[in-house]
Length: 179
Ligand code: SF4
Image (cartoon, rainbow, N blue to C red; front, top):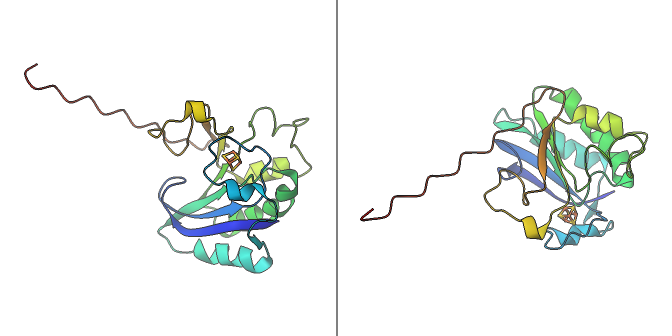
């Protein structure tokens, strides 16, 4: 597996300050994708044991709330084989930190037994993840006010009792002068 980027102080892809890994390879090809260079499975750098250690070290400070996994597509079958090991390492080293994963696949169908990207390690991967952001990016449903996601069809799904953050209340419209 290759990866495109590691952000060691990310405040955009989950709560608090996070370490984020953007993996390479994605077959969804959503119109308006924020990161189209990562569609290519060969984009970026090879993910090695040294890369995994860099992520584990970056997660160490107390101010880091958790880890976010993005793409590209973490649940492409060939990426799952590498990422399950990384997630296991992170969960073991930092049981108190939360793990979020963004996927263009649908949690209740594609990632379940018999689903189109269900593999022998999918259940194990999901066992380490606290929250899934699922669904392709749909440009026609783009909404920049959404919390931690780009289009209205995408969902924040808390797993294993983890509570997905609430959508903030929309600001009230200011009163017009003279009304
Ligand atoms: S799933 Fe994500 S990375 Fe893949 S094409 Fe859609 S928006 Fe881009």
